[in-house]
Image (cartoon, rainbow, N blue to C red; front, side, top):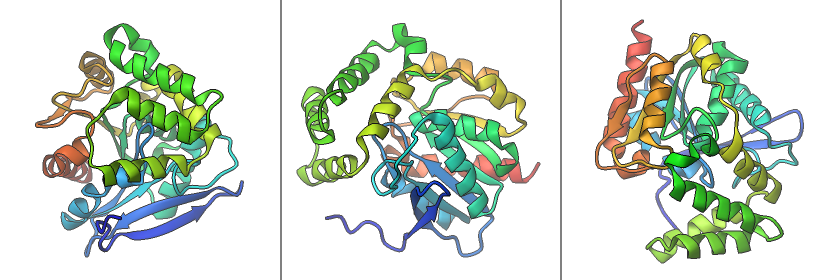
Amino acid sequence: MFDLFGDLIHTTIARPDGTHLALLTAEAKSPKGHVLAVHGFTGAKEDYLFLLPELAAKGWTASAVDLRGVHQSTSHGPYDLDTLAGDLVAVARHLGAPVHVVAHSFGGLVAQRAVVQDPDAFASLTLMCSGPAGLMASADLIPTTIERVSMFSRELAGHTLDEAWDAKTAYENVDMHPAMASFLRERFISGTHEAAVQNTADVLHAPDVVDAVAASGVHCAVMYGERDGTWNQATQNEMAVRLGTTPIVIPDSTHLPMLENTDATAEELVRIFERVAGQ
């Protein structure tokens, strides 16, 4: 449908429990290091389709992974946050740790736990449009987000992925090219229902582990689009203070700066990687 993948390399990594994790990789000619990108809630590795080659062009080999039970990563579970974090540690070790992990939204909740599990596997952690805990921890600040995710949670209960997705898109009523809408639908419904249910529960209710992340010694950054409101910006700013960093704001973007303003996102990420490399 889309001839956008160019020279991106498709690979899989097998886990001991039979899970196979799917990756897309853009290879740098003379790599300065490796970047591992983690998608958010209802997303997948293709959310980094434009960012990966930009990072590679700037000298950083970059991979994006489907979390288990999502799109092309097949698994019989479990799908809890600690297990997903263990997968990220395994991928980082496979790629040649330490890697720079860039984690979007729900992926940030996973990546935080991966850093706590094995700090030596990660050179840095960038939390992009993410938060310190599940959405319900700041529910009073993000009523629209809570309404949409709660609606989707109800639809997943007792319905197929197809039915839940169709109800979600009808409810949100986002204007989108039909080909893109079809791609996103097929990508989501190719996943596992149990994973979607678990991810929804965790994006709402995940406990806060930011203090443990700060204590890990891994360099942390907080980044969000200037109009991002999925996690309230005040919540993200407070998380940045706890992590000892200053938030990076990507102009002309909302909750998906890696797609909405790829150039600025890549430039800011490279500054982070180079700062860490120069320490």
